[in-house]
Each structure stands twice: as structure tokens, then as C-alpha cells.
Image (cartoon, rainbow over all chains, first blue to last red; front, side, top):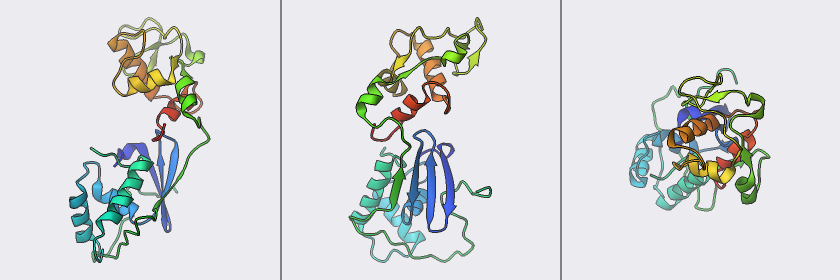
Length: 84
Length: 133
């Protein structure tokens, strides 16, 4: 996840607005993006570990790895997550 | 917005697990709003960043990028001309600004990283930060 001090976060009912200071871009994110970002934290983790952790912390039903990978790809494309 | 937590998740009182939908492969959970800055790759390549802002041309640049009075020991004189966006992008990625020594380049790039809206070169610098260039 991008460094905490580079983000300004505002909780707006069903959305969270994330202003990324260095790019000037505002991202409006909704579930499961905030949950993924909070779980990844600044240290990050593998896709498998992320899936396991989300399954532990939330009621996911059947974990769909391709859907989780798609959500991660969106976060990477938005610049909020980087691939190590 | 005065009481916003800077945590990505709002605080929750309950400890039981709540449902979380990951969505379908084609769905999206993010909408991004970009400011009206440089829109094209050509603009990033040709935009320029003066070091320092012409309004502060008499100041020197300290190693940490702050502006200090001219002649301050350890600080560097202003760059002779503005740097091109592509050169700054390379320097921010670990390279060296053209025509500068290693320490001078570090001081100049630290100055550039501190640029704020309203200072000459900020728009160019912000454009370099765009995830898709």
C-alpha cells in the first residue's frame, strides 16, 4: 500500500475517498478495496496470504482467487498498491 | 471532514466477522478522479522544472532541498537552466540530473520533491507522478 503520509483519507458513507498527494489523484474506493488495503498494510503480502487473511477476518463465502487478483490489479493500476 | 481518521478502515466496535464480497472479475471497486494536468506523454517529456522557482532565484539549495541564503556552506547555487520532465523523472528513479554532480543532483531532486502547488514546476512534477505517465 502507498505510504500512509502520502494519502489523505475521508470516509463518505459507502465510499472512501483517498487523495494521493504526490499524484493529485482522488480515488473513490468501495468494498473490497479498503479491506484489501487495510489487510496489505505497508509491508504487503502474497496473493495467497492475502486471500487467507481476508477469509479469516471476513465472511468471504468461497474465495474466488481470480476476483481477488482482479481487485488487486485495479489497486495496482490506480497506484495505491505496488508489486514487490 | 475534521474528524476523519487517517486509517483506511473506519473503527468498528463489533468483533464478529462481516460479509465481504470480492465482486466479479469484470467489476471494479475504484473510480479515479484525475486533476486537469498534463494529459499526454509528450507533455511530460517537454515540461520543465526550474531549480529554484524564478521568484527565489537568489537562493541556494541545501542538501535536503530547502532554500537557504546564497553562499550558505554546503548548499548549491541555482541550476543554470530548468530541467526537462523526462530528466527529472529519471533522476527521481535513481539517476542523476544532466550537468550536475551526484550531491548537487540529490539536493536538486530533494528540492523538486518538496514542490507545492503554486510554485513554478509543480504541475510538471505532479504530472511525473501519474501512475500511467
